[in-house]
Length: 242
Image 1: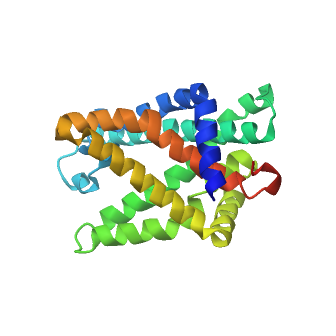
Image 2: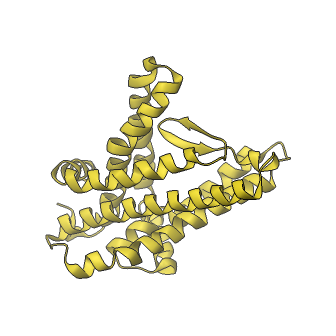
């Protein structure tokens, strides 16, 4: 497992230019929702949506803007995930990014977008439907936990294994079933890094630190944990472990 962390740091540092390019998409992914009329808030460097606000005074125009901003946000996030997974894939194989791969960016991004859209839509729907109950937050968390094995490694399977949506979901389930410790370690590493950056910038104040964290996490933290996720997935190939 230690070699996966080392490889993630190596990939991150060696291909910083490509990863920084993907980070631009990550910034856009988190900033776009803030520009919509949907009430949002910042926490631990990410943008969160108050889905309960759909029950308040939203106009048809506001709803359209909300939907559009959410879709664009997921699209930018999908593109960043694809670029990072391609970076890991071609560092491991030693191959160069040819025209066929660049031409396949649209297909990769579309399939990853489908994964993210499905995950976000289900969670939002559950949150809205259960809003008037006393266990809305708990139910949403449980559903998210149940969905995780199906979708967590699906983006990596789409890019690294050239899987389509259904096969990618199957690959994600299979990988987590065989190596559940990888997911637990990924969660632990993510919590430690996000908590550390939160503590570092907390003295700046709630408002300023929120936007600083959004920038720092988009540029540095999220790209690394995405690299780590991809390295974990590709590590199942013995010949590519180094």
